[in-house]
Image (cartoon, rainbow, N blue to C red; front, side, top):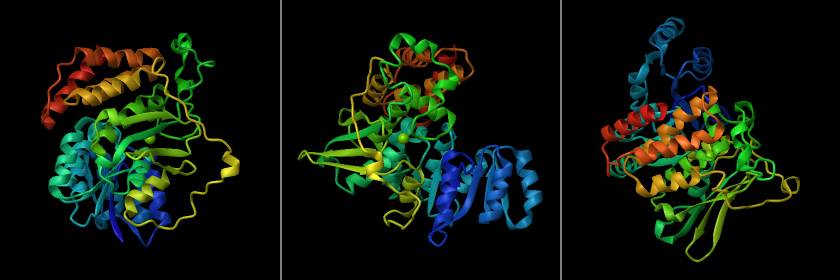
Length: 381
Ligand code: MG
């Protein structure tokens, strides 16, 4: 039985994690749940799973929940609540699925408390990959990937060292604007928010769906992979694979390629992270090869999607640049969703903020957060 703390229980990854826990009631116990604002769903999850401790961002909502639930459940709020949950003595693993930078401090707190962490929030490794992985090594805990691509690479590597790897291949669906004939570069400025929110193969949250349309999502994943598997950026490749059946691949030094495949379903990588090193039986994911028919691969079009090049630059340079890349993109996506800028201006904004940044090498967490705040102001400007 694994005692799991779930930070971000009401979001897209969070609700999938709850499903996985319901699939495997004798293997996974949810002992702590934290949510951002959805107190109704948090209440329903708490009644169903009976965690001893929960947390919600808003203090007023926390008070209301405490009144409803009574003494059997301890209700915390805000960042303090996230830290309390991340360090719960009974927790074996903390799954962090909070959108944005709020997951970073709880991730480090969990590691320092000797907990394994499962990372769904990209910001954690993109912003502070060097610090997080160093701390994890120091405390002898595992950093497990929840993202389908990183879970795939983890499964393909199967404990082989970085020296046996020629290249890690992250697959990308290519997003809704993959086709150059349907979406030539000249037409990118006409892309509407509604159109960008329609993703061909995955159902996900709003921010990550826009990031999939710009390929920033893949850029963030490239930087994550660089830290998670300790390979330099030059050995992280991207290949567009519209069917999203091959979730990623490892090319070994002898030329052999190992890939992980399945019908897309986030429950699979979540379950693997939570049950690792075991593989637990579940009927949820079924793959029908004749129905899939063809698997295709193509190079990413970096002329229409320069976010890939910006990510490579950020991951090559390291220091505070990946945090700046991430923060500027968050602000730009928000501006696009609010119809203040057009689609190509998302990438353009990030590029300009990166150009203006003075990189700090081997930054402390403080310096990273400073760079993050600076990039947000600069991008907004
Ligand atoms: Mg992904």
